[in-house]
Image 1 (cartoon, rainbow, N blue to C red):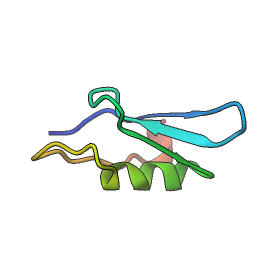
Image 2 (image 1 turned 90 degrees about the horizontal axis):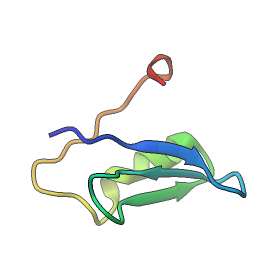
Image 3 (image 1 turned 45 degrees about the vertical axis):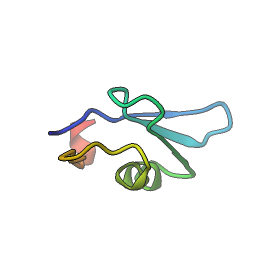
Image 4 (image 1 turned 180 degrees about the vertical axis):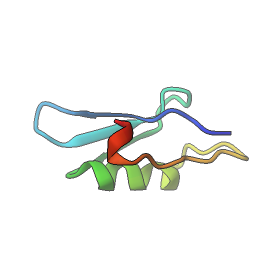
Length: 59
């Protein structure tokens, strides 16, 4: 199963990655790459979940 991950800056410029399908699944880091990389390592995974990566051209 692939899940959508949103990526937005907060008011301080920190990048916030969130998986809306799983409440509380959030990663906050200095860069987009760090925030996205930490989402699969969060304590919000469901069995069988996969988080795909996107190329810059897909944004």
